[in-house]
Image (cartoon, rainbow, N blue to C red; front, side):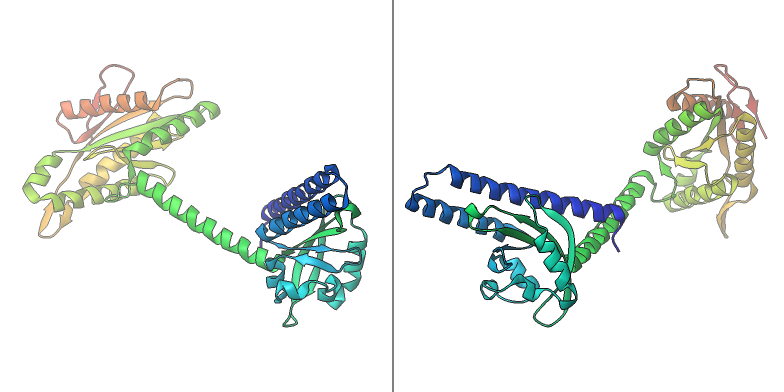
Length: 360
């Protein structure tokens, strides 16, 4: 089933197409009236106009026909023949009413009799095709002046075909949306750890800081390094180093909320964005992460290695006009203090160039 917006968009497309067709026909008609009116010139103009109309009809995606004032088909395009399952030449000279399903005969007579100089949409009925099936169509119809030697121009929109086409478009749109989402995830997610990539952190911080300033909430950042990670790689191999990175992220996720964002900021450097979290709350989260990392060795027997981290905490209050980059620099200063005092701990940026080291 199509959505109301899709139905309205399709209706507007049909209206614009019908208006364009009518405008082309009226232009051809006006050219005919402007031409000399002797018999030979009039015949030549009429023939040229008739060829132009037929060319327009064949280019249309919908069924189209020229009818005389009694509804007899003077000419139709190949698409109308396809819809009625008959060759177009077999339709010429037949009454269009003969292809209308009997239960819509009155509707056709009323609709055809109400045609005006403007195109009319919303005229819906069932046509009966060669195999007897009713095919729902939407009719657009307009009148032309008798000087043009035609009295009605009709466009029939195959609603069943349109509905299937809309379903195909919706399926294609869903597939494109899924592909776009997959590409966005691939572009912003580290394939090894599942954490966000460093490219994503600035957008996340900008959004959360703006929200915090508007609603009076703090935003905090944790910046973390795995201690002596190069030594782990050199001593136990890169495969073990990769295992440490993955397991470290798993332990971080146990300590943070779903609304927090874990980011791989560098090779062995990670960050956590904590929305709506003040300094006290951020320090508590950092302490949990440090404890979870210390708690159990990394790896599996017989290769199990203790791992520690250094962690810096920084918080932006809602009255500060701090940028995401500035907040990260604060956390980096706190992280530096931990490393300067021997690693394996946590420090909180306190507004000074250096922070006090808070070893756990």
